[in-house]
Image 1: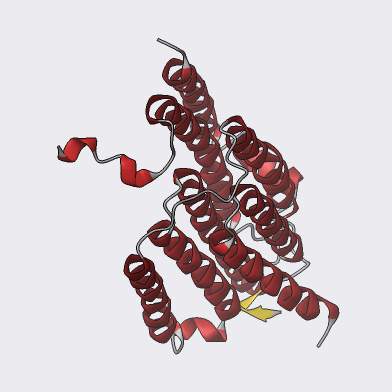
Image 2: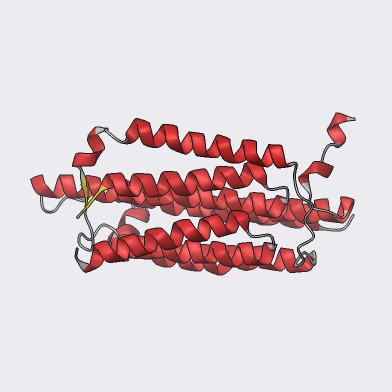
Length: 112
Length: 166
C-alpha cells in the first residue's frame, strides 16, 4: 500500500522536468524526447489512479473490475505517441535536409 | 519498510535522476540512453502496480521501438558530437525558473488534498493482467482499437510522404 500522493508527486516532477527541457534546449530532437517524457509522466499517473479506484471498488465488491478503462487509456496514449513519433521524426529529418541543422532558432522563416 | 516500498523509492530516484540527465546532458546520444533508463524505471513502477501488460508494452514500444528510432535519426544526422550551440543564459534561467515554479505551485496546491488518504493497490489485483485487459479491449473497445490501426496506417503513409525526396 502506498499513498497515491507519492505517485502524484513523482508524475508532477517528471512532467516539470519535461517542461524545463522543452523550454531550455534548442535541439529539436531533445525537445521531442522531453515531450515523450511528459506523456509518460501522465501515463504513470493514470495507472496509479486506476489502481486507487480498483482498491476502493474491491472493498465493496471483490469481483469488481473498476479501473480497467484507465489502463486501456494508457494503451491508447502509447499508440498515439508511437504514431506521433514517426511523423515528428520524419518532419525533423526533412528539416535537417533543408536547413542542415536541427536548431530550432533557425526555424524563424515565418518571421521574415 | 517492506520490499515494495524500497523498490518504489529506488525506482523513483532512478526515474527522476535519469530525467534530469536527459535534460542536462550535452550529447544527444547520452540523452537518448538516459531516456531509455527513465522508461525502464517507469516499467518497473508498472510492475509494482501489477500492471504487467502495460509494463511489457512500455518496454517494447517505448524503450524498444521509439528510442531506437530516435537513435537512428541522431546517428543519421551525425549529431553525436557536443556541437550544440547554447541558448542565451538568461533564457535558460527563465525556462528553469518557469518549470520549477509550476512544480512548486502544483505541489503546494495538491499537498493537502483529499487524495493523501487514498491508497494505491500494489502487487495484487488482476485488472492489469493481459487476460482481463485483452477481453475488455476486444469487446467494449474494439472500435477504438480498429480506429487506432487506421491511425497507424495514416501515420506510416504520412511519414513516407514527408520523408521522400522530391
